Length: 119
Picture 1 (tube, rainbow, N blue to C red):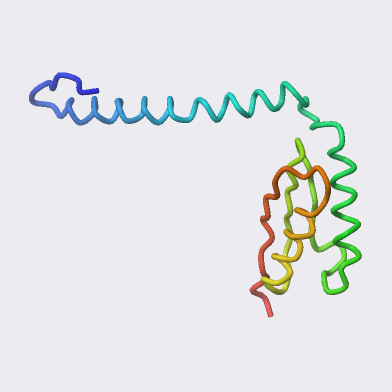
Picture 2 (cartoon, rainbow, N blue to C red):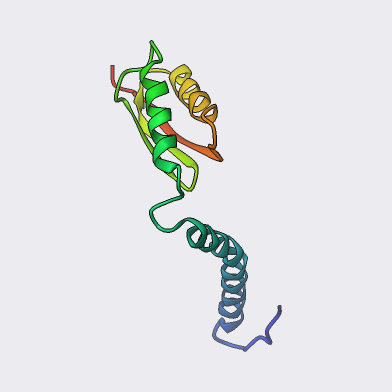
């Protein structure tokens, strides 16, 4: 979309910026609608089964011999498991993600666990 340029005060650049902003806003609209649809189906407190999924992930993490108990926080919303915490190795991050993905009814795992840099 090209708007006619105005001379003298740099309005052409401003119009081009506004055009790009509009494109970015419109490009983001479908994803916002998808999020809204999910909340319509499950509600703002999540889908039925979210609490069971979170409990199962926590239980499996706690039974893993080399993961620090309670080092990883687990939350579930709409069958998406969110993992957060601080661990001592990348292997622990990968293991926690694999454990969560193996729980029945998990649609996706968002793994935000980080390795501690403190020694």
